[in-house]
Image 1: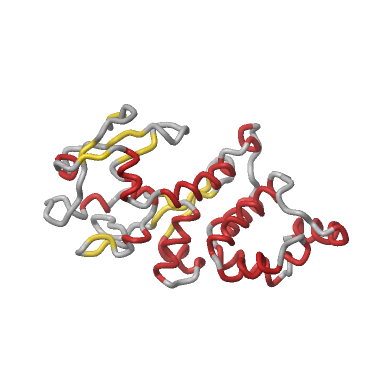
Image 2: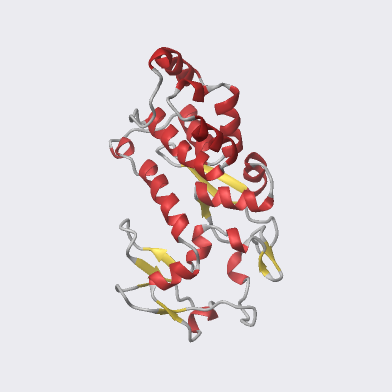
Length: 249
């Protein structure tokens, strides 16, 4: 790893003619953000619950936060399940960490990066040069960054810095609202939770059809439920009913 001074360029180009092509997609921990899961399962046209069960493994951190990783294949090379002979089979919807490679964040400011220049990766010896911003632009990272910043506001919330932890029930609530969006949608509409909040009809309809809008609402739902933030408005005549229902579910 080498820290990239601001404005400095790095070399990288990955293509099929390289002897190491595809080899970096094996035996590696690839952590998935909620937006990663949204894009990946959507391109596969399968429900979020099925995607999570088939392709991921979830770990719990000490603070009770769920960490979702790609489940590697059970073979000698532990290859990524989305890897084919021609490369990534979900390339247009690949995760943030795959888009960013060979760059890795070097701090929490989102501006400092390290570049991996291991000898086995011949792509770092190609002539093509990039600045960090040029690379991010070429890899379509902007939307991922926007969604990930919102999620990081949850995972780095002062609730945790004060030593608080999520119990099992709250961990499941966060996992469902951020990762298992189909289940979260069913949860919201089956129990008619949205009827208790001051929301426009058009906004409610969007949650039925638009996964990105649902994920954004999920972030608010977490802040409202776990951190008691005033980000959702309960109808005055539904306040007691809403609080009782939320605590019960």
